[in-house]
Length: 553
Image (cartoon, rainbow, N blue to C red):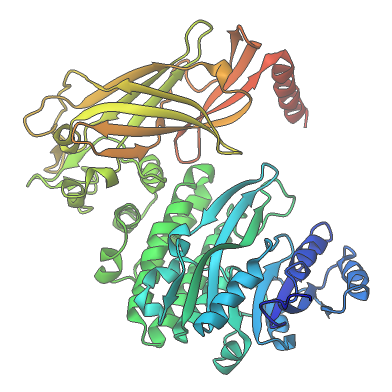
């Protein structure tokens, strides 16, 4: 006797796409493959001109659950086609899928079981970002989906505002319709920020599950970048601020002040930090416009909005507010990185309070005196000198208002992690040894340089380890560090790439294993040290050939 499927057909999957014939069929098939729980798949084509509508029509002829909706004119965004899908849905539940992404097996069953079993209007699960072509997967907001949870009201779990995605969730269709919850129409980047705020403002019960329910496929080399990756124009930042502002207003108007304040903290901790650490990639005009837009938006915050935000984003915001023109971009970039690093010089106000700099003493860093060591923005300089006989990595840990000496640096663990697949190629460890104290000169405006730790004359510690480049293999490698202290605590961080004569340049190193290794130490956009390696004469020739082609182009 054939077993009865646990869930009758109750779900509509809305797939939206525009000029994406290369991927839309895979997205639709992943939705249909979810099984009998899917009553219908509504594919909304947003005015494509690349043959996508005909491709979808051919799929629909062999699949009665697939319905194709054609928009005559492209809307310019994702909101309008999703709204068309909501309007066309006949199933009790609806979820959304973009044409260049996929649903993993079992996603619909996991969400539907949670929604029905808990009697909730919304069910949500884990989304993973899959980097292509490597296939490496990075979870999105995993802390929210560590275990099954019933949330009776969004205000009881304010971190829900951090997950602004609409695609890793299942919604009761009548809930969306009763509350008039829709996406912004037309060209409106970051439409999911607004939609998610409208959902939370309506006060649904939510069921959270630890299952992976959505695969967000990231193609950074695509000719047409997705909105979330195409951040090189200031209009993108302007659109993001507009969406953040609308989301805040929606939550506040619904009387959800805790959620509204949490949304602003999320902005400081995520959006502001992400764009700030990319400022080094932008031109002067962009930086000025970004700075002015950010200052205008931050002027709408009150003290409570800043108080609940994590320290790195809050301090970056205070630096922006304290200066009318872009300044201290390298320090801002490193503080905005993950994990945060605070590069010297370390200044104090006349009363001894740690401050950002002599020029901006109004930006207080007093919190650094009280935060646990594991959360401090420690700064470690990293200097790699490739050599044929012995490539060595030299590290220097800087004092931080006496907190390092207080904890007592003991050693450092070093890992080189492959950028694409996440594997660890080398693990090393070394003791941290104190340097001799170097006296700092007084600073202007009543601010003086930071002193070392209590009872200590040490202002930095150093370590040096040999690095076997031939053991790493080809590709890009990120440097990860863990500073260990005598009290048993530790701090995970990255190394600041030191620039100077003979550093951060491509070098050919002789290798007993490969004959030769072409190594390129470089600074990432957040200032961290990373390596590009091409072992062997063939690998070296391929790199030089690509470089020559770029020069000719």
